[in-house]
Image (tube, rainbow, N blue to C red; front, side, top):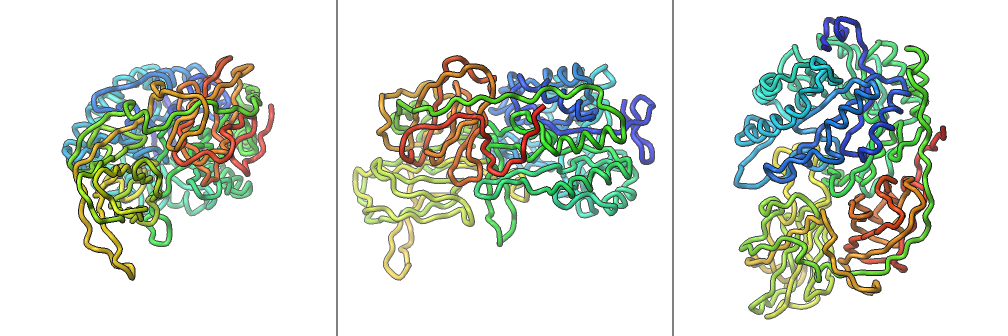
Length: 608
């Protein structure tokens, strides 16, 4: 069992340095887990760290999923087979630039009246139910039971969020009552502001989260001297994530990275590289940032790629950063125990034409439909993600031609009588006013399609809850001149269609691509092997892409991402690509699938 005394960790009585790399099982297909872990071990590291994602394991209340990418037992068995120790961070809040910080969306259903991450009922009850299920799964893999798990985090960066120490103590008690016998730690920023409320007591190891472009310095370790526990950089930020509309994060200079490695060795510190392998935000799983800053945009969704500028690329390749870590480890701790596995071989398929299409409005039966007096959010209808459509056919003349959307979460497209009018995106304001081409009259149909672009995963709004859809009202008004609007009328009695789009197999297609968006487009292509590749979406605007029914993630011409990663394990000899495009095809209805990644300024891959 891992223990600590003074400034050192001990594993089964022997001095032990945690030399870990973060790799989230839910960001890679299980077919690649062993290869990635072998590369972690070949780098000289002895431990792999992962979060757990409550929101996918229990996407809908009481329905648990531990299959495929969510098979955490397979992940733990693989780590043990490879010879790596494991750190598990079960949260239940994980941040991780992940949808809702890992908390299930159904917690936001108003009837529960939940305030997460504090002693709020029924949050505590639901949390205990979930952890009971999870811990039953992973308890056999604790080190004391002959497994690889040596440590677990209690909550996640709580010191940057709140100060309910009673909550942390209650959470720790759940760990203890569930017989999760291992070392417990906290992970928080490297100063008193964060650590003052980050752990329930000094018996919990306080790790710090630092690094990145700022580098680790003597000051960080001098601060750790005040914490009465071993030096432990629980997250050394060895890269960074990227938001839509920003430059991709390849912004840690080699010298800054090397300086941090040198400081880790100088102080003989335990560490966890965040990330050693980043992976992909497949489907609708990306989170969003709330920067809480009037000079910045207040809502910034994360791109599909979670490559993180990490040592191991999104597709499993090697980088100069990997070599720097390996060199440090071998210089100071001896040769790595295994040889480096071969680099992945990518494939070039070429142009794929989309030959069939179908309008979304002709396929609304694929969603769940409701009648609602008011425009309620996704959570009230039990919807976790995707899109929600609010529709109303008017039975009276309104004499109004402005639509005010109050509480857009996050991107709303407005249609009148099936014709596209305008789009409003939650950026600096959650409200928007859209001018209609005419006054609404009897028989006119108003449709508002709202996309959930990712629930906020960090900041104060994780306490309030980032509900999706329209979290307010639809108001009709008119402009009287000089920018003055009449007092608006709230619009009631809506038809609501919830479109999670987890499964698009029921779409009915016609030949050709002359269709109004939002629409589905389909094509087929051959693959010579199961090597990975990338789909480039230069002719597309915004939407998601499915390969053989698997949602590989969102695309958006807003940038900076130029292509989506296709794991080769998804491919067959004959393959189907389905694209849900919300805004419109630009030119030819086609994509390019090749061996060029979608991160424009990506570091060069080192081929082994």
